[in-house]
Length: 109
Image (cartoon, rainbow, N blue to C red; front, side, top):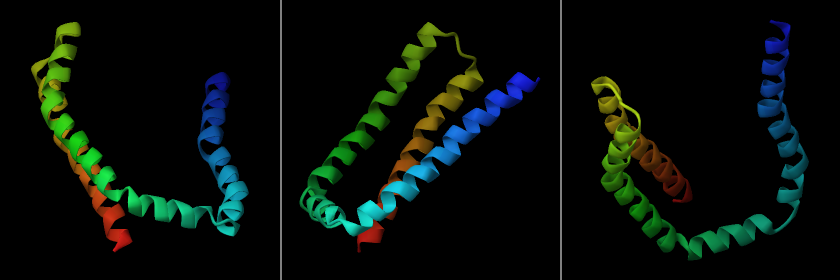
């Protein structure tokens, strides 16, 4: 029981404390350098390519998802409910990706 607790505590520490320490270490370096300005200018020049690649990602997600699920169906016998859930997960993933992209584009306007 204690081993499980210690292992869980170590995992939580790695997932929470280390990213916070990294943020505290690297944030002043990013703020004081002109790296952010260079990234911003780079992203504005490649934004059409970025949007085109995301469109390809959306198209691939919509078209290839059923084929991927059918391949998994052949490898592992899924119940009808799990198959339906896996096929519906495509729309949830698509909605999440579109929402995040809309937030990113909206923050630039």
